[in-house]
Image 1 (cartoon, rainbow, N blue to C red):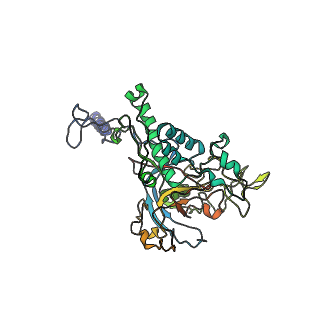
Image 2: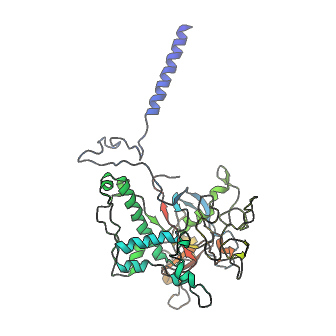
Image 3: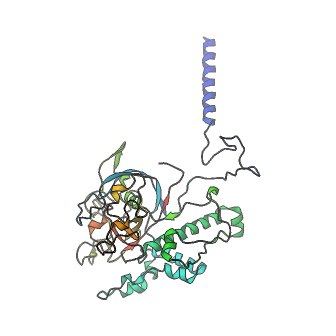
Length: 424
């Protein structure tokens, strides 16, 4: 009996030892790659060898919210009242990414203008200025918006408008360098001691400005910019693709209840067919977005203002959707990356779809020269509805377009960033 007990005890000890050994044996990861290569056995970080820098894992840049990717139905779910038939329903998958929780506000854009005014040519600065005359109307007394909306402190956290797609793209390029310079300054020992990171100075170009901005504003670096392998810098900020924007706006993560089942689709970035808050309590019946209820009705009556805003409203003014994103419906429309084509849904890829140009649907197929079509490779899509739009345009599946060099008082933007190093 005693012998059996000792044998059993010994077996348990062996099993425990094996389990502990198994726990200690871990596969290398991006964060903990080990000291030697699992392919060659050669040690990393030798004086003349392959350098593997320390890496803490993927990080989100300032103001970004993580959007877990997945499958969803891209396209319009509501009645196509304008009969455009340009966003038919289809199933696609979107990789995980990050998106700004808010629209870019006046204070953010003024920070950008200040930086390039100090570091760049007058030409670059002038080209970056928003068009404040978008508020002007000979039959409306909007004079104060023309002179004050961008710069008066009271409008600091209102969405910037009067910005073209090209200007929004330029801002994204600058923001990438600005954020990475700050990260490098605070994360690199050498840079932290000197107080200097790489330069954000931008040069002007004699070539076509649109060609420059579409490819990304030119940057020059006074000190060597850290390599991507260093782990010290983030991926690029950029304008989100149309599919990313629509996926993030619908936020169907809030409709799941078991396995891969969803309780409902969404016409708007919230549940139901109403634009009012259905939840009981003090906020019941309040508008969930800033939009135009009908002809001449931008806000309702004094004392009972339905959405609290005649024009735009502060970027945190309305409830966030289930991804934590504010104003994915209303306030201002938002630029997305895609070039407009009415039949994109017929040819696009079902994984991370995007239309960068006229591939498989060339502009020459449309009678642009004969003035029977306006379609070309400079038309960019915008989505979301604005303070000046009726509720129909609040639905993420609706889409409109405008020339990438044009701007209005109803279009702003937010940035996105590709999620790298994970596959959720």
